[in-house]
Length: 196
Image (tube, rainbow, N blue to C red; front, side):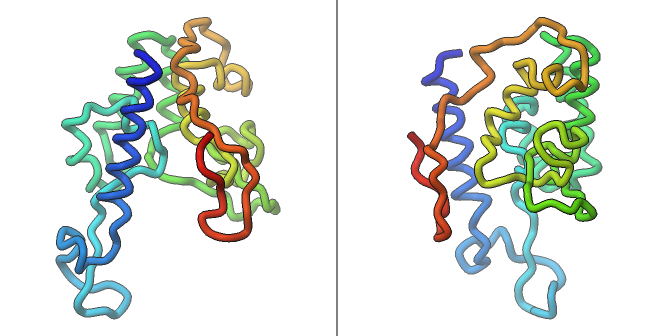
């Protein structure tokens, strides 16, 4: 898979999230309105139309034809993503890798441990017991979510964190999207700089 192809897939996924997943005004997006009210407003109800807590995970593991079906499922009862994480991984990684990826990446939710006395978030920190920087979890502004996910899937991230033995079946050319930013974040929206 060429870098241009990977970047094209990433750009397409981000564009879809920006267009379809971020429109919260029901007047602009009629698909978001329906059903009983929430928060005391008798006219507006929002329906989940995208489930993308872990960018790159659905795109890497799930067949595209399953996205529409799984986007509206409750995250803890999504048998499609759960089984496809393991089935996909077993094509080129060890059983231990497949089982660990399934345990770390499913369900497709952002987990945080509010009991942690920390101000530092860390993507996959909760799921890895703090191996990615903090047990709090969530995601820090400077976390390169895509590279962390790709590193876990195709690289040696899980073994480097001490979660499993190295199976020596890495695909280094797939462990990054090769998109970075200078990390000179600001205190004003959008907080981060443009990609390099």
